[in-house]
Image (spheres, rainbow, N blue to C red):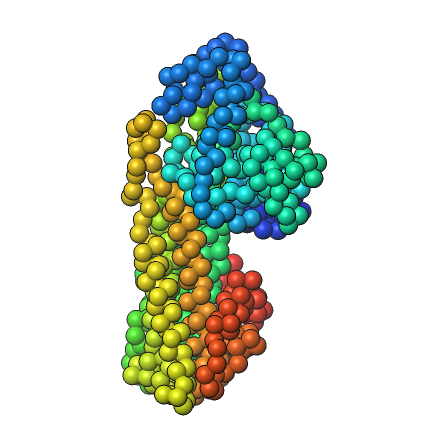
Length: 509
């Protein structure tokens, strides 16, 4: 994939991530340029006719009944940006900020927003030359668009705000100057066209669901390692069980575990050591599988939103109309990202229970807290505490944001989605889940070393080797936090997954 051609209609999650994180080159298709130009022609005609069109010849929100003359249009659009840029909190990460820019370009490319082509090309140039606005994370209600975050995105375009360029945080004007990108003067409708949309929540949620799909492979690897350590009963993965309850995620998870455990001599058959295992082992296909189904549902909803027009008003080229609607409302994504949070949280819930089976001698039969000289040594005792704390925190973060609403703009905007909060919560939950899985992998390797290791499976052997490369067996107490960090790092950067994929296919093609 040499470059990503923007049409407004076919941006995939993979291409989106490539632009956000790999700085993939972006360009507008010829059809997108034509659509943008035709849409702008309609706005110019509406202004000339002095038609009543929200945000073009009127004020915003409660001020929608205040008329704006043609000679005030430029001031109106500039005032919109500078007054709406009131976000707070830490800035979004660079990849999310780039994602917001890319999604706004993709939405505008459909040609229903009435913006000039040169303004859209300014955003494209910023992506390609690496000018990234500094955008505070907090301040969006998720309806009327992600107004505050997107206004911060626009500030450098008009020579204001802050932006990162070549690793340095600069004033917006200076960043644009160094990159050789002229700033713009916004004309009628253009400020509104840039900030009235769901791009902050969608960019955050899109990268989170992209990572969640990758993380599910890691969760399956961690579960397979716990299978090995516990000499778990592999009959629970028998495909005949899953074919008669054919949820796709359940089927996929059972197959993945079987591939990871292929040739394992540690797993047992029903009645060989025990008749059945606890739920956190026996029900991995059902639990991980439910998250698989949720992630792919959210992926589908996200890709629809990525390729949608979320502006207001909508400029209809064929009939030369500007119609006010509610496409900016984030509820479809708010509910989806709340669902994502729940599905992510469950991966950590069950992982922590598998971890407990390893460190608790009354359940797993290993030395207490996975250390031989217990008492003098605490081993992995507090690792389980830390995992439990993260799991508990996730339960708070998974409270749905979408069920909340606070009226705004003097009750003109009387129902909002809180979708950006939902997306941000999902992202934080994902980070907690990744750390819990790193802890489970470390504990499973330790338990395998302390138990009777008859021979690991194809996939689990590769995972064991990758973890042991950075986390040696624990003989006596030593600081573990850095090793947990290192284990988490190989989950985040793909090292573990690549090692396992070189040994066995962990996902259906």
